Image (cartoon, rainbow, N blue to C red; front, side):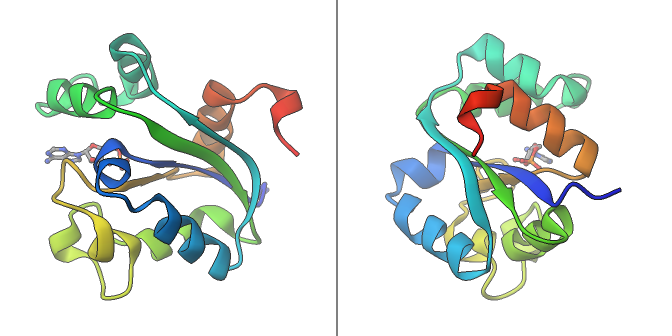
Length: 139
Ligand code: CMP
């Protein structure tokens, strides 16, 4: 059963480039309700833990260095069909392949610095959301 929630991070590249406001605007305009949100920074260890599923990938080192190099915005979003609709809103992992009007097309740098994260399943949305938020921080 769908939980109607997904988890997102505005990644360090988009924060550095001043895109927090524009990205949140687009998320809200697309019908997502923010039920939890914080401005925070992952330590290298926390990034390794968050992305443990990718630890055998050749880009793992680059990924965790990047994700811990500066602050991020972490949020839990609510909408009917949230996981799938949010992945459509952000576009393909590689911004070069992302459709016009998607967040990655508009704000991402390249495949490794791709502006935003979106959970790929309801199960991972729940795991990733509870990595960043205690129950009482979710409204
Ligand atoms: P995301 O889907 O948020 O989580 C996994 C991340 O790994 C992905 O975003 C990309 O930022 C990164 N990633 C995926 N493929 C590559 C790649 N080929 N090279 C570098 N980073 C990648």
